[in-house]
Image (cartoon, rainbow, N blue to C red; front, side, top):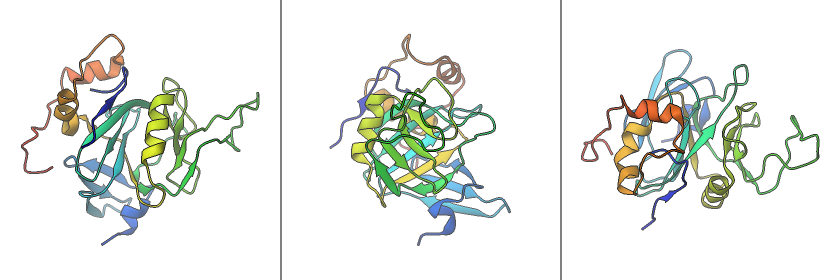
Length: 213
């Protein structure tokens, strides 16, 4: 059984929608179920039970600013603070599949002027170049998901090309995994980001014995 890996900054049939529609909105219904609404208002319920997947709750108002890894047994075994697309470069929401992995990489669109790789441990989830990769989790991006070095390496090793799903949402996901993280030993501390501390004061966790897993 996997053990949850915590970092000091950690937060406490297929359809076109599931394949990844960047214009859609994703609303978590439980730990593994999501409502995906496209730009025409059509809704699709996607259940990822029995699959490995990553949930990215974007660094935006109304969301967590964190990423979580959930294995096929429904165990939330990894979580970390992230940053996402800045205004004008917003990260698309939707349910995608990791389609490419690169251990070492430099952005072609935004290369580092010093010639240093700036997209190591990349997990691409859109054909437009959006990826989860090592980066400054305190600085907003051009659309990618920035994760600290330890977290990026951990997720890179675990995720499988062509199999691991990436759920990107503009909603809070923490209520559904709060008790999992508490069970792992999470305690709010001085390094917990201010926006998370503020949300924890009003958040209503979903009980682990809920009918929806």
